[in-house]
Amino acid sequence: MRHLSMEQLLEARGPASDPGSVAIREHLAACESCRAELDRLHQRSARLRALPSLRPSRDRWPEVRRRLAAEQRTSRVRRVLVGGVALAASLTLAVLLGGGRAVDQDDTAQAIAAAMAHSQLLERALSQYQPELRVTDGRTATIAAGLEDRIAHVDQQLQQAELLEQAQRQAALLRLWRERVGLMDALVDVHVTRARNVGL
Image (cartoon, rainbow, N blue to C red; front, side):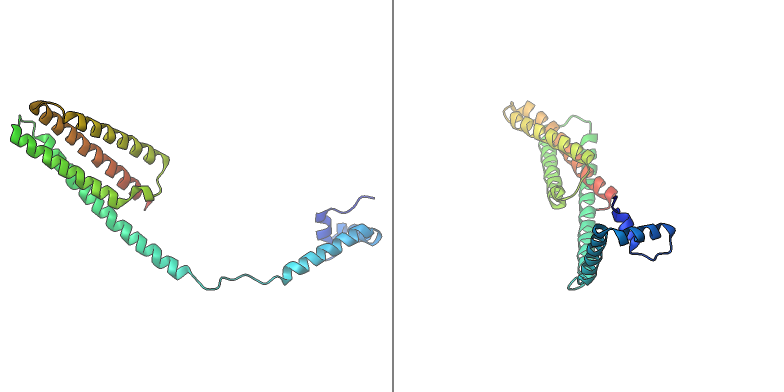
């Protein structure tokens, strides 16, 4: 004898209005195994209905909403700060690079000091922005990693430039510090632009 499927047993629990349910009920009257399975199904349903309904001990949504609003305010302040610093550094770099005239040693030393100061300013802005704690997409992470590698390479070249003679050293340091500022500016811009795109 062929036994009833789970769907047929579930159908047997409903009202006997459908012609197919008559055949199912006749089978149940004749088959002890299917009746036992239907009884087990009734018991499981009764036990499930008897389970207590789960409710949270208290509503935590207002607390989550307050914390989210505070984080969004902090994030906006950081974006404005980093964006302002990046803009100031970009303008200064444009002024430094736009000169195009031959500079003497004093002017070169001042230009190197200015580039170093801007590099440090961008590094502080980047550390306040804390990109390592933020979620980024794969493309942004790849671009940022490439820029960080190039910055590390420029840092190595800066160390090597210190070993050159005075005239060569000044020119090399100026060129490398300007390159480093440009890369740092691009790195800050990558993180800030990505954060604006995803609404962080």
